[in-house]
Image (cartoon, rainbow, N blue to C red; front, side, top):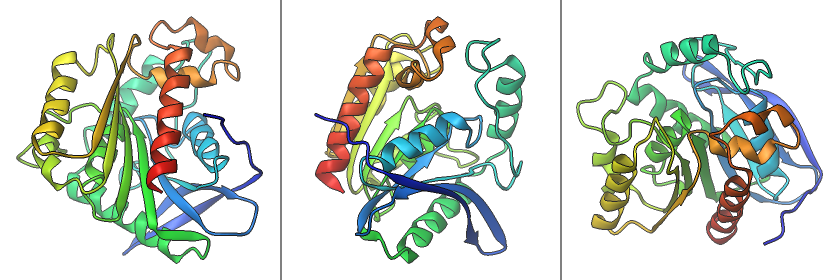
Length: 264
């Protein structure tokens, strides 16, 4: 399946949510027309260059792509970029990202997702009935949450942590809300992931099957965060990270394209 590379425009915008202004990165086709929209959910490192790259990659396929800052309430402006010295992210980045991750609340996240959907519907070039999402790590969990909203037609959840065990302050884990998923969800995991176990991803698959959710599950010989391998040519030092698998990332991307083309 060929990957497009259409001309795009990018900008930083703010998404209103009552008294909160959520920073977001917006990428969209430069051409006129109406397009499906995809919300991009960050890892614990904020809307950094990796998330911006993914947002642009999606826009180049002919979608409006937007990456809202999910730590806006806790740490406005926070982001940690790739570090060549640490073959990805530094220990300090992990520590700080996890500190913020542990402070987020389910209902606040859901509110910010809904505000992002509402914002997208105000854009004249968005097909309001064709909205999907994609997320990685923390964002993979957030994407699973977003999938329960009626506006979300297609979801790509990459190695979402804690789906089977937690829900950011709520009593029941997010997995228990699987029956609320309305659209199609694709879930991606690495078989060498030390943060999301094989037992966890098998529980997710079993729950999707039990509730007869339209889904596919993909597993690759890779570790956590393996999709960053898609950008090894741009960031060559990433090739030293044993968790990454460029071939797995490329295949997963083709599955994502298929999902969005079919559902958005």
